[in-house]
Length: 482
Image (cartoon, rainbow, N blue to C red):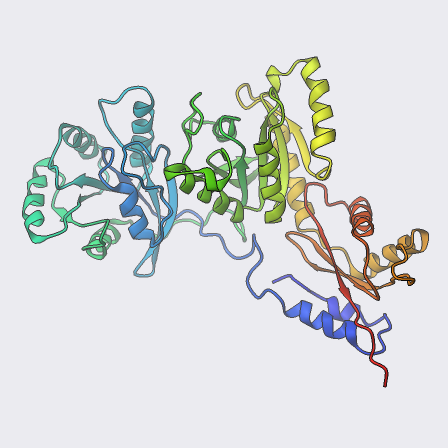
């Protein structure tokens, strides 16, 4: 925990007759016992279990049952899950990666075909394949076709006969032996029936050798890709990954679940998180779109830096500004990537600069890059911007240097008089990093405009490009007369 480090010790050179500042500093040092974002060991690569099957057999419901929370989007229509979506699961003290996939239908075409291709790729990369079949329907032609592919893969396959809610259904599930994949294990993902027994079988099939640790201490830095639908988030992830990792389609809303991908850029490994496009306010969303928006917010919370993609060829919208506002509220570092730059002419560039000056006036600190995910133009500029934003996000200013700077600043530009008295800044310290937070101990209230002035000058003096900073006050109470 880095919050409040060395603060009390560096305070000793400052006068405080009644010990008020010292007491407040002790409170700051003890705040927030939980780990800051980015601390703690990363899991690294774990054994991978891919959950596959034809559409609407209950794969995402089973995934939610295994991980113990409602993460995967579930809706009673086929095709809700479209990309490979990874989750970390634990059973009997053993950790593994669970990959939820879209419906695998060998006879599909169009979008459904591309979803099926993603499912097949997940099966090829997995250590164990969990093949889910709807026991209430029995073996279909699609199940037989998928089963044939899995038999040829040579991978361990665990056959889950889902939607088995009673003993009668268990007898019907025995018909799945015909798939040639071994014993079918009856389970009810919805009610949890026999799910523990199924996980025991999965664990027995996992490789026993421990995986090699990936990355250094702290793990890869986490980068969330945010933006409204169809601005090019998935295209950018595919571009930096060097392969078609997620589906890209002109139809808005192709991505529903956050998709994690380890990507190496400039000799460093990052964990990119592709998210669903934020369409409108949460209260206006329904069904799968509502849960997709919730997962996008969760992805932002577990990230360290957000890359907000904006369609440079179109006018800045309310959704763009709301997404930037979400990032500011979350306290994450931020890079604004103006995508589709190859479609921007000189006239559009002129008006775009005007829009930025007018609508992003409160976030001049956000780093900006102009890219084209489709052509790859200037995508290499994204890495230095991310690194700089993360460096600013974790910067700590020495207390002595901060106080000397503020002393000189206040002497040159004192705070405005309030109630006939001029408030004084008695002491200042940086209470935490990630994001940087500064606390001013004052003798009176500082106007908001003056606090914004201090924030701007602190940013200019010490950097913090690409990172939000927070400046708060602790006002000394008036001493009671004896």
